[in-house]
Length: 428
Image (cartoon, rainbow, N blue to C red; front, side, top):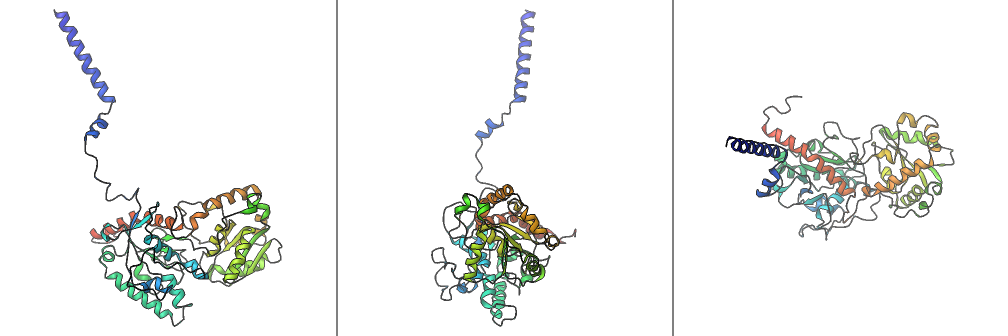
């Protein structure tokens, strides 16, 4: 009797112990989670996994497309279908046309994968796009700083800031979540202090004080290339290194400001070398065609600083599949969190560039195998520097919107802190 009772007790103890061990090693939550209701939607704080939602202000056309087409009327809403095409004969103005392509991408209603799309309810927006063609305004209303017509450019900026500062969405964030393009060095020059907090689309930081433009809040854009893209490499597919007979190519204005003064000194240093083409030139339709052919037949394309650390020539070289040789101590490059320029470009300091024979000796001794590897990298990234309408996946416009998207978490942090702090930035 007692023996049976003891056996039963031992059996139950063993059973309970086994169950406890089993439950300790197997997580029952996946089963119970299936019984729970699925979440109704993603967190409103998360932007991962979806395109950036952008509200674009409906500005009168004098702020944008009327500079391209003076007959453009405000009566009909601007859409992707009635958007004036960027003029083929725009010449040097094209390099500053980033503002147009960003606007065009928001007007385009295609279903292809995009980094940003337009929302018409500002309450749903992650960011606000200001479609003021500030670079075209400078190029259209004043060719230089003292041109009387620049008064029109100044007045547009004054009117725009009055409009924005009356907007509750500008007031709500202090303009921090507003995206403002200004790729010309003189763009928006009359009202820059009023947009210090905004996300600025610039090509470099050569003309902006540190308190206005910074890498942590702003987006570095490529210039829009002015030479035609090299889409068919032709003989290059057989032996691109030997078929490009010019070692180093430069064609452009040699009279520049700031770091760009190096161009005149390089002209003297590189003169008399048969494998170098260094020519003073201005940007005309015919000269752009000549530069196109010159870059396509050269192994390396020289990119010294211009009036600012960057210039359009770098991006002309990229789409020409000509290895860029970059000379600038202060250049910032677009998309550098995603693209490693050292894989397809060479960098020299100003000091190195002015040492007689230093650059040429380096290029003449450059291994063919290494050049071919860099050339392949260059071809693989060149599509990231194309501006086009309709936009295409991973092109320059989509890359720029992705860069803007990267800035939004910091923007939200700044806005939220500002709303509750009694002493803003008390820790500074």
